[in-house]
Image 1 (cartoon, one colour):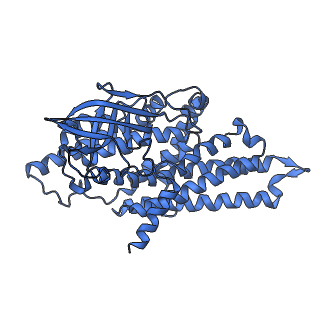
Image 2 (spheres, one colour; image 1 turned 90 degrees about the vertical axis):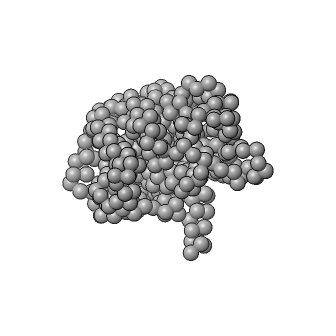
Image 3 (cartoon, one colour; image 1 turned 90 degrees about the horizontal axis):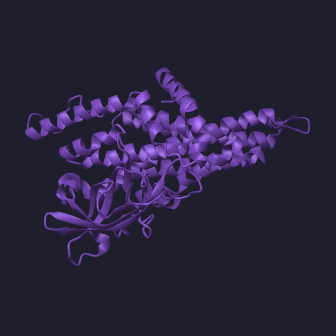
Length: 416
């Protein structure tokens, strides 16, 4: 894939029109007025029929899984429903809105992606049929907002090893305790995917204990959701803390319904989500880069200095050329991801880390260069590149810092 298809360009244009009509007029409120993004996201999903498509795919999947459970269908049958071939079109449909929205408001994509991709994705990949029907569909159609709670105040990049949140058996129930922080959608989430270490009373070192995943609902006794944090950027994406004090849950809320670490259990579930999250950052970065480049090119043509447009100065041309190189490179990474989905392949953790590392650095550098090119105007909110510079910086922090991406890439190289 070396360019968007005609159909995909039509979708891009339609999403761009939605962004201009529904997001841009609310940008100041989203940025400074504490306006949650969820109604805009719901309107986006309804406008483009994403809720109906999600419902249809969900029904088809659940029907198939029930047939497998009853023995009517083999799990590895090569029917159309189980085939991964042809998912490239679906991947493009997912990434195009991300790119277009990130040109104006990257925080909306973060809020939407965590709910649809991480919270719903965790349940749909590892949950029981009952759990998918109880929680999955409402998240996939965005009737409910989801949060994915793994990061803790003292774990950060050591998310799994340094985790202190605990799940202790008490008869047929579990008692959950812990504190999660930097949780996207945390203040408003209806459904929360919560990771905790199993405390079974043994002498197993805490770093080696099983990681279990639980599904929680807003308003449960002992669960406190903080107010939104004040942040450097991504103001349209509410972020907060979760406090759990003796929250009692039944086994029906334990993902997959068992403590057995089939397929890696909670640890593997978290790592699989890292791949999804990191590849998504590349699409977000592309949107930021494209918009910063567009603003910079237009400004360079219009801004005059010493009697001529600054676009005629070689230093300005160099800045624009480097932005275009970054745009092409990140776009090619996005296209490669779509092609892999089309062929039924998945990114390894190292590949997703490399994709995220380069894209995050490129977006941050391009956004800051755009501020520099616009000079004093770039530092003002009116020209918007200052917002994109603030928003893009988090690409190098969340979903694993740049330093963590490097370790994952290096470990993969050294293990060959």
